[in-house]
Amino acid sequence: MQIIGTFVTSFLLVLVAAGTSMGGVRLKDITDLQGARANQLYGFGLVIGLGNTGGKSLFTQKVATDMLQRLCVGANTFQDARSDNTYKSGNISAVMVTAEIGPFSRRGSRIDVTVAILDDAQSLLNGELLLTPLKGVDGVVYAVAQGSVTVGGFSAKGQAASVQKNQVTVGRVVGGATVEHEARGEVLCNGQVRMLLKHPDHLTSDSIARVVNTWLPGHALALDAGTVVVDVPPQFRAFTVAFLGDLGGLEVDPDIPARVVINERTGTVVTGENVKISTVGIAHGNLAVVTRETPLVSQPEPFGKGKTVVVPRTDVGITEEGARIHIAPRTVNVGDLARVLNALGVTPRDLISIFQALKKAGALQAELIVM
Image (cartoon, rainbow, N blue to C red; front, side, top):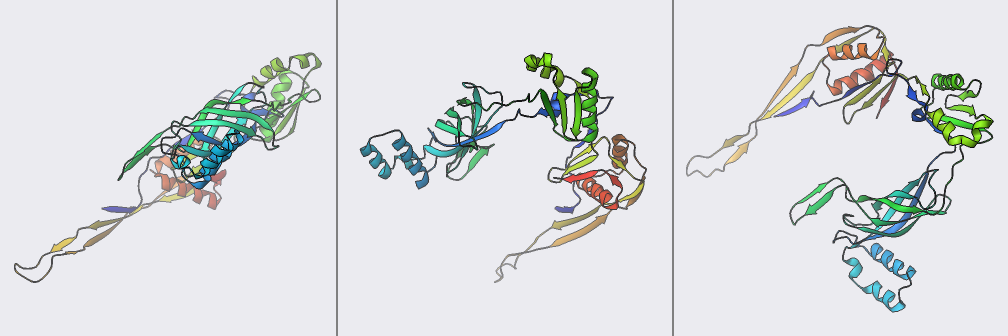
């Protein structure tokens, strides 16, 4: 039996509510400090020690022989390596290595790196990353990485079947890179610090300035929806760390924009607290098409010259539920909206269709985002 049309899948309706009833949030959780930013690093390296799951292409062999040359291996050995089958045994892999260096990482500190296969290797399980320089966009080597690669899964295969859990072509070296060059961030500039909102909003920006001015009168100004400037008093400039710690601990009630986020692949719907709808009528009905295959076997008479054949037989049925019209009044909060939708007994696909139809009709007073 095959059912085409309405089908039931599990879904999640997340109601995000923020306000005075939930308490404030800390400034350091909704803002970043200008100048305190991370930088991306990348490099090209070689992983060895793979148990016949590495790359077997000519590209991988050339990478290995070039590394031998950089290690000043004897000329004869280097020439022999180009024709040797050792590097085709699947024990090595050419990889790309990426990392992120923070603004407060100092020389000698350790950072994690991610290793991803670049060639035709099958797995990085039990691999060892050889010394790999990691550069920034400016071409400067900020860190060097080396160490054992860990993967979050496994794979096994035989001649006729294989099994795999999670990805084995990407791994991590925890604390595998040592910082050699610092990417310092300067958060204090001309006696000021700038707080950058992670989700710019004029009302939230103004609220942050008001909270800071309550704590330190006359020292904060909201420049725009995403920036708040705070003047650091001269007596605190020698104690910037303590000042920023106290500043980040202040609490504010951020304004949540009216948004409905829909993920059609998973059936997830997330609605904000301020989502409202105008008075509107909603008709909801389902159409189910059911097909059933009951093949019939036709056999010839005994000692007959005919052949046994299978004759297909298909039954098709259509069931349509009566549509019901619900009058949804203008809601005042997300709870009322949830009750209206639950009264319809909607499925995930129906819920998504209803939100899209409400937006098209101009009745949904919120931004609709489809992922």
